Image 1 (cartoon, one colour):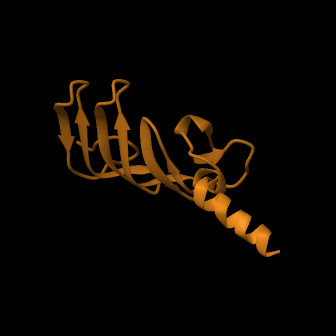
Image 2: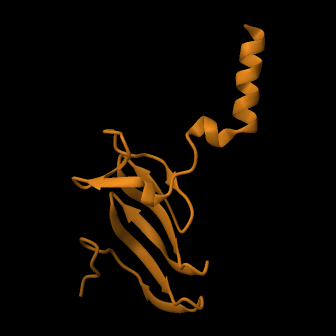
Length: 114
């Protein structure tokens, strides 16, 4: 019993991505009825995504800080989501990394209010 437990602890410490189910890209998620789900699941996704789009989900909705990158690795945009909607300050960048646009305020249904 002790050997089995020691082996399990070793696997978790050496391969944390296996223990957590691996990294998730947003392309690996499904969007249906206003929520994001992991493929082959009916439970709304709650975890972080990696690669070109990085952010967290809470109960199937985007929540907290998010960062988007251009294909060349430069920052594309960054901001915060609240309950699945853009909220607060968002900064948008050109492909060369310079600031394109900065918007401070609360978005409504993904659109900047006038």
